[in-house]
Image (tube, rainbow, N blue to C red; front, side, top):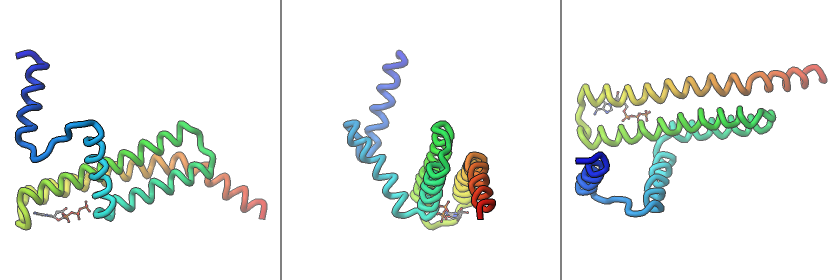
Length: 147
Ligand SMILES: Nc1ncnc2c1ncn2[C@@H]1O[C@H](COP(=O)(O)OP(=O)(O)OP(=O)(O)O)[C@@H](O)[C@H]1O
C-alpha cells in the first residue's frame, strides 16, 4: 500500500468511528471556534490567561515595543492559550473514560497536563517581563524624575 493510500484508509477508518465529521473547511473552523468559546465560558484559568495576554498586548502598545517584540509576546500568549485548550481536552477525555471514579492514572494525566500549562505560563511570563520591564522601568523613572 502506498503512503497516500494508507493515509486515506486511516482517514476513512477514523471517520467511521466519529459521531460527526467536518465535511468542509468552514465547518472545521466553526468546530474549532466552538472549542475556544467553550474554554472561555467554562475554564477560569483560560479566562485569566486571556486577560493577562490582553494586558501584555496593551502594555506593549503603550510602551511602543517593536513589532518583533509584539510578535514574540503574541506567540507566548498563544502558546499558553493553546496549552490550556489541550489541558481542557485532556480533562474532558479523562472524565469521559473514568467519570467520577478515582483513578491514580487519571490523577497523573490531569496533574501532568496542568503541569505543562504551568511550565509554559511561567516561561511566557519570563518572556513578557524581559520585553516589557525595561521600557516600563524607563517610563516610570522618567516620570519620577520629572515630579
Ligand atoms: N478521576 C480522577 N481520579 C483521580 N484524581 C482526579 C480525578 N479527577 C480529578 N482528579 C484530581 O483533581 C485535580 C483537579 O481536577 P479537575 O478535573 O477539577 O481539573 P481542574 O481543576 O479543572 O484543572 P485545571 O485547573 O488545570 O483546569 C486533578 O489535577 C487531579 O489531581
